[in-house]
Image 1 (cartoon, rainbow, N blue to C red):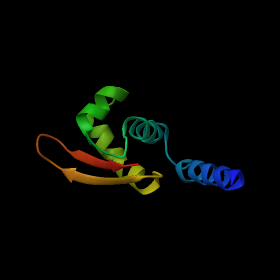
Image 2: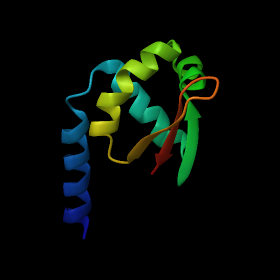
Image 3: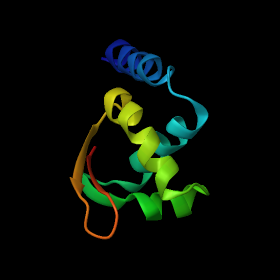
Length: 86
């Protein structure tokens, strides 16, 4: 069982290894802050990570494709909202 868990961790690391520093910070933040399903506004993620909402949005495509959890663009009302399911 531990070999499988270690394998899963290696795979997750390999998946996110192609992300740049900002994208990795976003993945780490979303993983840390989401408990099950959570919703995040780009503006608030940017404030927490010292980035602009535009920087967050520009990096979310790569995050969405590489993250070891589900990320879905959810809404646009007063900024983009992302649905994250860990």
